[in-house]
Image 1 (cartoon, rainbow, N blue to C red):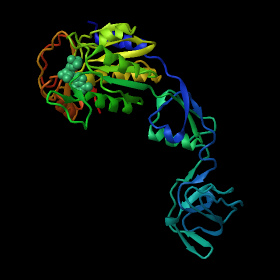
Image 2 (spheres, rainbow, N blue to C red; image 1 turned 180 degrees about the vertical axis):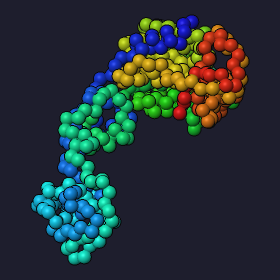
Image 3 (cartoon, rainbow, N blue to C red; image 1 turned 90 degrees about the horizontal axis):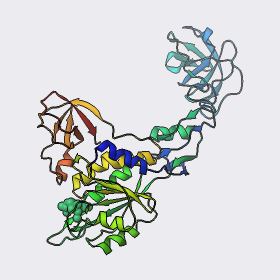
Length: 391
Ligand code: AMP
Ligand code: MG
């Protein structure tokens, strides 16, 4: 048995950086920007009005001053002339501020009669003009790597980047194992249950920028498992679920070894998730997760997400932990690192109830994992604990 941090190091060593591909901007959200991109233009490209009003000379903008309106500038339709003394141009938000003007008096501070405006309220000091390039200049850089947020996509659009260099999304083959499993929607036999964590893991993979491929369920025979392994060809990561212990029906380690897996480790000192294994199979990283639904999901959070981040070029970091006070007391921990299902409310965390690794209802209720170090003594309300937030 190795500690969680050693297991992570092994997994990072297996996590090959994925190649770069180009996607249309519309498909870029959630992808990882692979290379810095430079703005193809300056924004705004001209000094732009930030208000509806009148563009004129700031030195003349006194209360009661009068101006002759000599033109109009709207968004998309500038006014080509030059504003002289005693003159103003009607202007709207987003319009280029004409030459000669260096202030926009908002329309609320003005009365207009025919072509003549009078400033009725003392204008404030703001010029209501967005200088050219105040957002970004031609050649400004958006740094990589970064997972592209909706806001990043808007920025890229504004920079006129229509094609975005991103890391290829890792294709993750998910192999469920077990004679007892059927797919959701099927009718299970009397001794059967529904494959559940497979779907939870697929959702987790999708949320972290991967493309999951749910393979047919492998039955608990060597032949069936070999067949399903062969369907994983082309994947960037193979994840098996279940069959990882040492029971008579736990076939994954044996079959993977027969197929030539180069094993990195087997068994991690954690709870839940002890029978975790990993290695390289025909050049492809493979992780064998325990079958218990909560174990599989916790291992997904603790191991697969950081591994995917590494493959996407986002660095080699363990799942982010924050510290917060306990809202409940906790018993002393055993010799393995324990990831307890917890509920964070108002900045403190309580355990989410029974910690059996088969209880998906408890996991669904939880929004965090409380991390207890090996042999951590009993903890009382108010004691600080490490927490991994789940969503
Ligand atoms: P195993 O590691 O195959 O011994 O599985 C441990 C426990 O997890 C057993 O109770 C299995 O029925 C259950 N299990 C294994 N795989 C899945 C799965 N994909 N979805 C739900 N439960 C599973
Ligand atoms: Mg099994």
